[in-house]
Every structure is written in structure tokens, then in C-alpha cells.
Image (tube, rainbow, N blue to C red; front, side, top):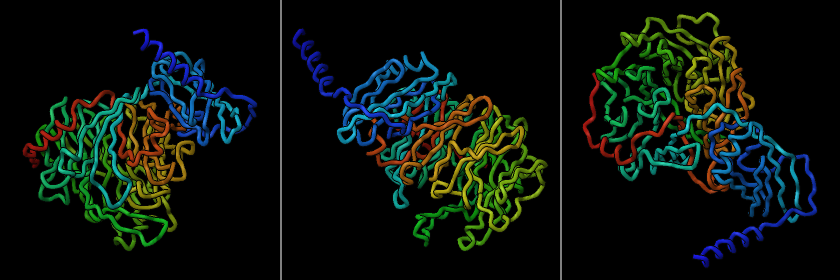
Length: 494
């Protein structure tokens, strides 16, 4: 026993002796070259350690609050227990980085981690997929605890005959109410209600397809969903890789209790493309995106979606009789008096189209994506996030949040103080989850990337994190549960 103890002590001493002490240190006014970029970010008190890498360094010394870390190969890794004690005891943590690059020690400009007591929902779900237009298989849906590095598989391609799987979404961030899709022959929507899984065929003969994009009503009894004929096409322009667009799309409501479809001719207009529906937090409206149909693919760059809404009554399960245009994508102008009409044709030179509207749970803010045209922002480098104050109508361009590459799919935390989104800001190819704090004044703060145990994780991981969603708790099923549910006959809708 003593021999083992002496061996452990010797190893620890040996490791510490291998980490050089900074000498002949020069001072820099620049921030340290760390990855991910965790400089001057606002973080929740319950986030996992922000382990990072100092690019080009072979040795590093970091002081963060009362913690000192010496690392080799530029890697900075915090103990989980020390990290959470650090966050619990501080609101502003000063971080000082001294690194040896090319034989020279440099003390960089210190930066802050601003810790807020507003917690982030502790579980994140996402789809892992190769960021290519040729491959859609080998897909997994996973959930990750953001408070540590625990990760679990929700669905796995090896248990689903390598089918496409996508769009796991919760109702009101509730882990006991969620749904995902398994595509292909014998596929269906897998509905989770308190851990009990149901396989649904949310399609009737008059629909152009099965359900694609969806959102739960506040009660969880209904979903609003779109049906879409989706066309992928290659670009002739060398700077663009792929375009994905709809040739037909409509919006419906499904009653999950009675397995029936609720329709309105206002949502099934053959001259209008309707998509991305979502309920308002009070259940009184369905917001969605709509665009006048143009000749496709010839006039694809004229395809621009506006944000509209239609009333809904959860008590009776009925849709309203008018569609209000909240604002037009063509000019990004919000309408102080919503118009009772379909979106007008875009004006010449207009360069914005709206996708993925999501309203904060407190009903204060509407988050959405804008791009030059079309309905698939993941392939548009210019796609950015926008946030609308639903009380004042003011639209925040979120300059502190957006990058010069694709910033897209987003979801709110249950306290309305955080949202997560997918960004390709690093290399334009791989999407990663970023978290953004929205303070009580509605001001967005600099976002930060989902931390990983290894500082070099994102340098070597060859999958994109797609469609991130937050949950107040762990999702109560796993890949084998989904496999068993898929063996059932799908419940039909009428």
C-alpha cells in the first residue's frame, strides 16, 4: 500500500516538475490566443469547466480567481470540483494567461468571466452529422449535461437501419414531453410523454408530406407542424456549395389526444409557401414564415419569407380567420398595425428572408434567423440571428452575437435568460453550440461555445452539432427505447 502511495506521489511530483516556471516574461497588450474564445464572456453559475487551448504554446500558466493551473502543450484543464467552487464564490473572475510560444514567455492582457446566477437549463440535445451534402447517415441524437461532461445517446443509426433522424424538440423545455423523427420506410414521429413512447404517422392523404418542422402548444396537447417538399440542389457559383428549398409547404395543427388534424385554407394556400410554425408561450397564436411562391429554381433568389401569425384557441382547438403579417422580410420593417393579407412580393434589392421564429418563454422576445433568400440558413454564410422586442417592436441586430459565417438554429432556456444556437464561425463548415445570455434589460452578451473535457476536442471532432435544444432535465429514454418504439405500428391521424 505504501509503495503505491509513494509511486503516486512520485508521479505527481514528476508531472509538476515537467511544467516549466515562467521566466524572462514579456508583457502583451493583446488578449491571449485561446480556443475556444472564452475571453470576456458571460457564463451561468452551473456551466461545466471552460477548458481551453492556448494556440502555439508548449507551456502555459493560468490564474483564474484563486485557482492556478500549469499545463503543457498549451492545454488548460480545470478540476470540476474546484471549478464549481470558483463559480459559486465569484461574480467577476479575472483570468491571467502566461504562455511560452517559440521559447518566449508572454503575459497576455487579462480578461473576465462574468458569472451570473441565472442558470442555464442543464441538458442540451443535438444531432451529430457530417457537414456534407453527400452523407446523411451515421447519425446520432445525443443529450449532454452542460453542468459536467456527461453525454448519452437518444437515437443511434446502428439501431435504426441507418435511417435519417432529426428534430428532437421538447415542449416548454420539459424533458417529459418531446418528439423526434425517424425518416424512411417504416419511420414515424416518436412522441415522448413522461417516458412513454408513441410512434405516430402525422400525415393524411391531402398533405404534400408528413410533418417536418413542429412546435408544441403550452398544454402539450397540440403541435403545429409544416409539411414540406424539400429540394436539394447544387450551386453553379463556386462560392456556394448547396441550396435547399421548398417547392410546396403548408402548416397544420395536430391534436395528440384525439389523433386528428386541424386545418385552415389560410395555412394551405397553393400560391404561398408556409413553414417553421411555432406557438406563442400563451398558446394564443401560431407564428410561422410565409413567402409568395416564385418560379423555382429560376427565381430562387426572389424567394423571401416574412413572419406572420394566426390566432389559435387551445380550449376549442380552433384556428383563427385571419393571418396578420408581423413584419415583411423584404424591408425588415415591422408593422405597427398587422395587415390582413398575405406577404407582398419583395422589393427590388431586398436581401433578407426570415426563418425559425422562436419566442422566449416569458413572451418578451422573438428570436429568428435572417438570410438573403430561401429557407435553409445552414448553407447560407450570411445568415444571422435577430431578436425582436415584442412589446416595443424594436429589432436587435445582435452584433455582439453574430459572426461572419452561418449563425442559425436556436432555442431558449426555460428562464428566458439564455438561448443556444448553432454557429459555423470557426471554419465555415462545422456547426457548434453557442450560448448567449440575455439580461433583464434585454441586452445580449458575447456568446461562448459548449465546453468540452479536452481543450483540443473541436480540432479533431468531425461532426456538426445540429439543431441544439435545451431541457430542464434529462430526457427519460434512450436509443433502445426508440428502437422498440419503431417496431410498433404507427398511430394514424385523421
